Image 1: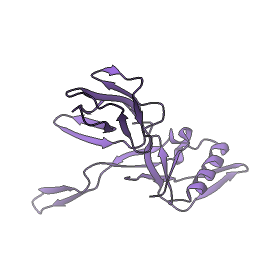
Image 2: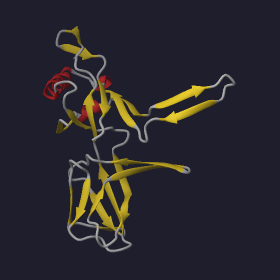
Image 3: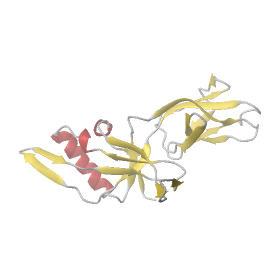
Image 4: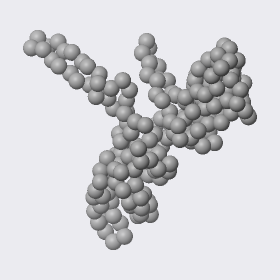
Length: 199
């Protein structure tokens, strides 16, 4: 899949509207009872970043970014300011053999939970721990796949946790740039949809 390892301008992303969405089919009977079927096991985010545009300089940056991604053709990184970091996330338990662990974020509410696979951690933010002890060396984190790899497999029973920030892999959900002229040297793009991609 075509993907550019570049982050959408974070100052524009700061004003984005949107978040996680699901695909649920609801069938209602004549008596009012209903059957709900969740088509997706995990959420897929979507946002409109138009409200993040505050000035002409930002729009100029956005136009260049949109052209470089060729509309919907290339994916890119997006910072969801409402959900971009995790502290103390459990990644696994050592078995003395396994060296690599996928970064994830687990959301828990009551008896239910959802585990989100994180494939785009932000460089320089990953901090792994073995049994609660920070590891300053002996590991590496792939910022394109979210795989944390230790040089030596964690011992049996050792809990592996990590702190990190992450981006969401997304793409523009349009191939057309609908910019309007408000006044001289001031233009606006009223709707800029972006959508999370599964990679």
